Image 1 (spheres, rainbow, N blue to C red):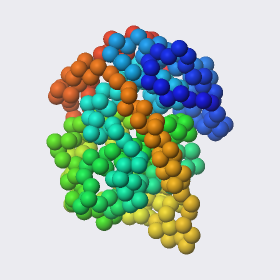
Image 2 (tube, helix red, strand yellow):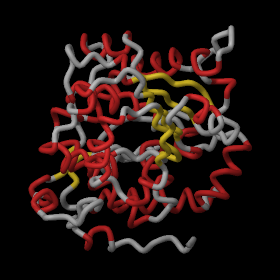
Image 3 (cartoon, rainbow, N blue to C red):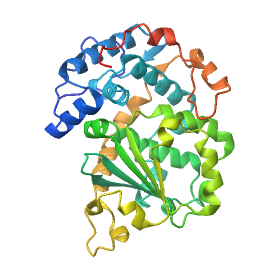
Length: 329
C-alpha cells in the first residue's frame, strides 16, 4: 500500500487502504474492536467527510493508517474518534515545546536513544508489543521533563503508526530501580494539569497494561499526585510490583532482558528495529507539524476547572455530533 503523508484535508484522491494484517490480528480486530472490511471502509469515509467539512481544521493528514489510529483506539465510534482527533490537533499546537519539531537526529534525542531509556522488547502471546522504560538511564543532571516528554512522544508517535500495535496495543513496563527523588520531582505540580490531558487524550494508542517495578517508597506520594490526573479507566491498568519476580509472572520471560530472568543469553529485542524506523520517519514527523486547527476555538478547554481524573471537555460537540455513530455497538 502506498501512503501519502499529505496534510490537505480534502485531497483530490484519498489513498486506497488494503488490509495486510496477519490472520491473528484480523481476528483480534474483529473480536476487540468490532472491525471488519465494511465497517473500516465506512468509518474512514465518514471521518474523511467530517474532516473536510470541519470549519476549524485547516490541515490534517487523511491517509488511512493515520486515521485508523483514532478509529481503532475508540473501537470505531465515529464521534469518539473525531473528538480525539480534535484534541490531538489542539494539544499539539497548544504545547509545541512538547509535541512539535521532533527530530530523531537532534543531538539530545540521539543521546537519549544511546542511553537506552526506551526499549522495545518484542511481542507477547496476545500480540501486544512490550515496551520497557528504565528510569535509571534517564540522566536528570543532563535532561529535564521537556526532553523526556519529547523523546517518549516521538517514539510512541511512530510506534502508533504500526498497525499491529494499533490493533493489539502496548504493554508498558517502567523499571524504577535506582531512580532518585530527582526523577520524580521532574513532574512539577504546575505541569500536571497539562500532562493529564496528554496521558488521557493525546496519543491514540491502546495501552493495555502498565507495570511499575521497584517504585521507591519515597516516591509513593508523588505517584499519588500524578494519579489524580489519570483517567479512572487507565488507573485500572496499572500494576505495581515490589520485586522482579513478581513482574516476571505477568510478562513473557522469553523477551525480558537477562537481568530480569537470570538467563545467560540475552534475548534479541526489537529496540534497534523500531529505533531505525523512528530515524527513517524524520520527514513524517516534520509533516505532522504542518497539521493545523484553529486553537482559539478550543481555548476554553484549558481554562475549565475539571473534576479529578477527568480529561478536558468543551470541544465543539456540534461538530462531532454531526456524523452518526456506526451501528456497531
